[in-house]
Image 1 (cartoon, rainbow, N blue to C red):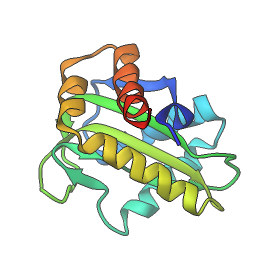
Image 2 (cartoon, rainbow, N blue to C red; image 1 turned 90 degrees about the horizontal axis):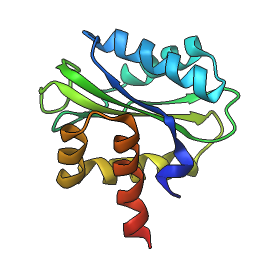
Image 3 (tube, rainbow, N blue to C red; image 1 turned 90 degrees about the vertical axis):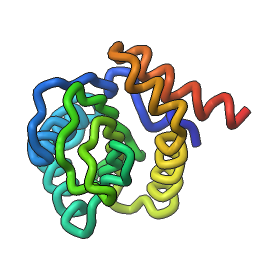
Image 4 (tube, rainbow, N blue to C red; image 1 turned 30 degrees about the horizontal axis):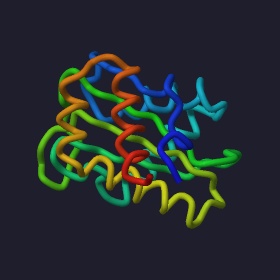
Length: 154
């Protein structure tokens, strides 16, 4: 599995207007709905439901919210770089500025876990996060995310 299978270039955004986790989930749902033809409401509700089980803020300014959605055909991703970090309830109590959300079919067992592991490994690399934070062009962010794993897999 490659990040290019999960993430479309148009699903990578630089966002400057967010002030809360609730607004973040709404924007993630709206982008996912417009690009991957899913219900925005279902996406938002599923993200909130999953978040109620425990924080998906993994530390170091990174959040990996994820949800299972009825009617999806494959695991899909949305990446946001936030211009201004927001409080998220992360495990390290630090605000987040890099968000990689995953939306998986309700019935996807191992594919959802593989995708989450791939994204987690990618986002744990300090060099990648430093490059993401140093750039504000969505096309460049997409290239950083997708080239990092592609070169390691080769």
